[in-house]
Amino acid sequence: MSIAQSFSDGFVWGAATAAFQIEGALDADGRGESIWDRFSRTPGNIRNGDSAAIACDHYNLWQKDVAIMKEIGLNGYRFSISWPRVFPSGTGKMNPAGLGFYDRLVDALLEAGITPFPTLYHWDLPQGLEDAGGWPRRSTAYAFADYAGAVVEHLGDRVKHWVTINEPWCVVELGYRFGEHAPGRRDASAALDAAHHVMLAHGLGMQAAKAAASGVAVGIAKNVDVKTPRSTHPADIRVAALEDAFRNRWYLDPVFRGEYPHDGVVARNWDQACVLPGDLDAISAPMDFVGFNYYSRTVVQDNSVSDAERPRPLVEADLPRTTMGWEVYPDGLRDLLVRFNGDYQLPPVYVTENGVAFPDQLVDGAVHDENRRVYLEQHFAAAAEAHAAGVPLRGYFIWTLMDNFEWAMGYTPRFGLVWTDFDTQERILKDSARWLGEEISRG
Image 1 (cartoon, helix red, strand yellow):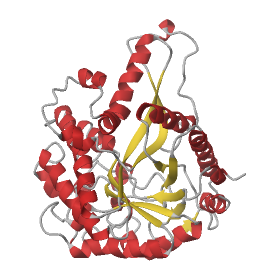
Image 2 (tube, rainbow, N blue to C red; image 1 turned 90 degrees about the horizontal axis):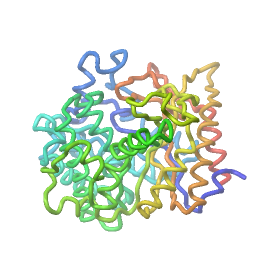
Image 3 (cartoon, rainbow, N blue to C red; image 1 turned 90 degrees about the vertical axis):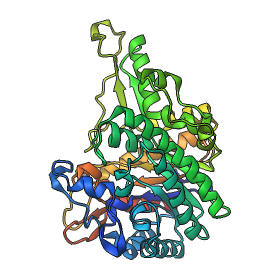
Image 4 (cartoon, rainbow, N blue to C red; image 1 turned 60 degrees about the horizontal axis):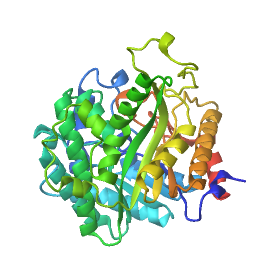
C-alpha cells in the first residue's frame, strides 16, 4: 500500500519555498530593500559570498515552476510573499506591481489544481522597519498586521489558507540573539522583546486577516526539534527540558495556553515588561490550523556532569547526518506530533516543512537521489503513525521544491525535489520528485 493511502481524502501533498530564496529580481518593479539584502551584501555573512540577486529567477520563471509542480503531481504549494515587494519601506503606500506578481502566481496555481498556502512572513523584514528598531520594537508587530490585512484583502477571494509567521525561533534566535541570520544582531535582551513581538504579530496578523476576507483559515508555522537527554541523569533531563522550553514551548505555549513557559522565563530572568494587557489574548486566539517544520533532533547534556557519573546506556549522537550536519531521526516527527496533540489538543495540523539536503550530483542529465527518497519515505511513515494515533494531520509540504539560496549557507546545500542549475536556470526533476508523484497518484 502506498503511504499516501494512510491519510484521509483531501490530504494536501505539497512543496514549500520562500520568496528571498527563489525569486531573485531584488530590484524589480519597485521592490524595497529587506534585511536579507543588506545582510547578504556584508562580507563574511554568506558562505562563498553567494548572492540571492538571481537565486532561481522564480520572479521571471514562475510559469515554468508551476508547470513543474503540476508535472510532479502536487496539489498544494506553500510559498511566501515578500513584504518589501508589497510595502517597499514596510509601511505606507502599497506597491501594486509587487502584489501583482502574487496575483498572477495564485491564478496560475488555481488553474493547475494546486491550492496556494502563502506565508506572510518568511524572514524578509523590510530594511526600513529594521532601521526603526526591527522586531524588538512593538511598532513592527503593528506594521505586520497592516501588511497582513492588505494582502489578505487583495488575495483572500481566491486564497483560503494563510500562514502568518514562519519559524519564529529562527527569526528571533538566529537573527537577534546569535547574529547568524539577518539582521545579524547579538543582543539577548533585544531577542526577548523580539520573541514577544513576533508572537504578537502573529496574533494581530490573524485578526487582520480574518477581518479582511471571509472564510480564510489562518495559522502559524513553528519549527520544532526533539531535545533528547544524553542519559537519565537528572541534570541531563533538566537541561533537555529547558532546551525544549527555549526551542518548542516558548512559541507554542503562548498560542495554545496564553502564557510563556515558566521554566524558560525564570532561566532567562525575563521581566516580561514588553507584554502588555491583551497581548496574550490576541496571541492565543484559536487558530484554524497549526504548521510544524521538522528536520532533526539534538542530543543535549549538562556539561558539568562527567560520563562516568551518567547511568548507562548513554545516548550517542551517531545517526546518519545530512549536508547540514543534522541527524536523520524520523521517529522524532511522530513523537513530537503525538506529544503536542496530547499537550495542546491541536487544531488541524500540517507538516509545513520537512526535507533534506544531501550532496546531490547531476550525472548524464539525471539526479539519482535514493537517499532523499528513503528519507522522505521514513518521515511519511512516521507522520502516518502520528495520524493513526489521532493527530489531525491534513497535509505535508516538502522542503523544498527546488534547490535554492539556503540563507547563510548560500547555494551549497541542495534540498530540492528539483535540481537547479544556477548558471542556466535549467530545472531537472530528481528521482525523488518522480517517486513522490507516483506515491501521490496512488493515494
